[in-house]
Length: 132
Image 1 (cartoon, rainbow, N blue to C red):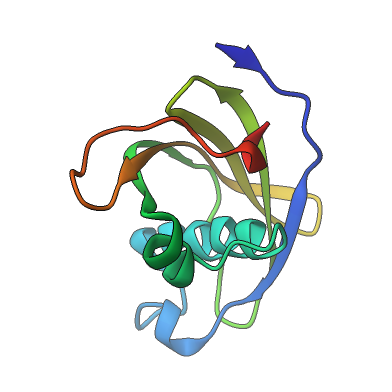
Image 2: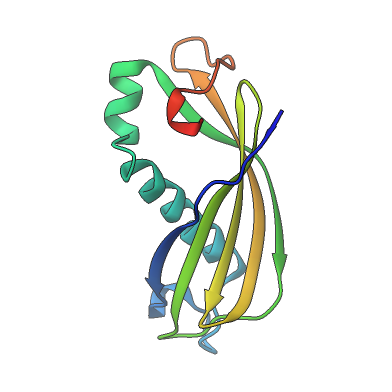
């Protein structure tokens, strides 16, 4: 296992009506969508389009586990930032630390474990070099 001191990737997100309940509070599952977008953008920033990558490299990334801590709610029209960084690596797994902020206030934090799989066998395979 390797501990990472990687840079932080930041993705701005605005909360829309579809993200909230009738009271204007963000649904708990929507935070997972925000984090998924941030991880996808992290990969796109490293020239990995997940759709074409799976087709050409025969590798895919799936969430194995996620631990989420909801601290404060986000609301309709809030401007948020999702911060993503690699916390730890193994041969086949990457652990992302993801946090969602409104200004300086931490709203949600998560640890997301991704596994790299072969698209044909669906078996774990070594991570590509983009994670090193």
